[in-house]
Structures are given as C-alpha cells and as structure tokens.
Length: 219
Image (cartoon, rainbow, N blue to C red; front, side):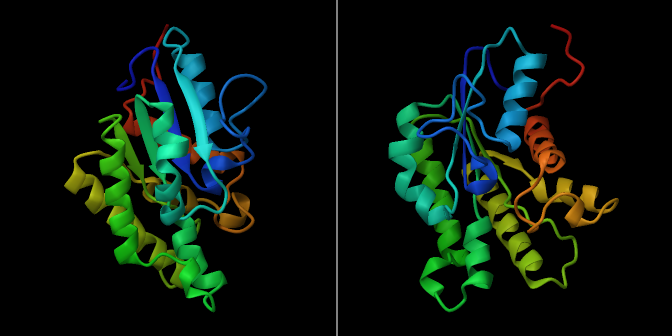
C-alpha cells in the first residue's frame, strides 16, 4: 500500500465526504468520521493494517464547492499537515447549475473548476506531495440525463488536472457505473448524490484501490 505507517490521511470534500462527521475535526474517538466513505476507509485501514496506526481525518464540509474548499484550504486542511490528502469535490459545483439556475453565482463553471483544482493541488503540494484527486459522482448512468453528462465533464477535468499536476487520479464515477449495471440508483441513494452504506463502500473501495490497498494482507 502507498500509505506509510503512522501517517495522517486527510480526506477533503463536500457533504459526500462530510456525512455527519465530528466538528471541527473528524478524528479520534466516538465515531468521528461520519457515516460515509471516510468511515469505511478508517475501518478498513484499521482492520487490515492495524500495525500502521494511520490517522484518518474527515474534513469534508457539507455544501462546499471547489471555490469554498479553496477558500478554507489553508485553515481547515493544510494546517493539519497531512501526509496524504484526498480531494473529492465538484458535486455542488455542478448541482447548483441545476437546482438553483436562477442564482448563477452559486455555481462553479468548468473553467473556474479547473482553475480551483489546480490551485488546490499546488497549494497542497507545499505540505505534501501525496495527493489523490477523486472524480465527483452522480449516481445515474444515463448520459441523456443533463446533470449526469455534466458531472462526467467535471470528472474529465479531474483526470486532466491529475495528469497535468502529476498526482494520483481516482475514477470513482467508473466504479459507480459498474454498480449501476446491476441495480437502480434508488437502491443506493435517494437523490443520486448522497449514498447509503453500500454506496459509501463503492467510493471507499475505489480510493483504496488507487492507494494499492492489499485486500488479502495478513498482519
């Protein structure tokens, strides 16, 4: 696995990451990681790599766009001095274009999204070179759905920025699409954005595979 023992692994994002985490910092005792994929990540790292003592920190913030994350990056993320940092952002950048189109200033269009991601990566590199960019996800496989098509456009931007900035890329949407070949999105999420526990596992597995997690490890 890429993550070394005694590392701090910070997960940044929006409500899909947040999922009721402890405020102000999602770490420590009493289920601080919320009910989403960070909780799955913490559980698997602890159970499969108990000798690594990895500190998983959930710093998702509900409602965040990439603009919001960039604005709080230094205060909430970089100040924690992560050894590894994953970033899953973009769902609200897209969603605001569809649920509040009458307030265009709330959405983040592709050009700004790309610029925000680049700034997030470059600022984060002042603290750690171990950065993983994850695609935002919409639990809908049909490209005739406008929001689904738009989210994939943003996922492609994540892919391009990851290659340009030479950081790890995690294609969560492709993993979601594989699941949706076998079940309806309603089986996973009520709004096609916020997943239940099975959906959280899909996201967590995609991220852990990117980190070369050894599923058969014997400690």
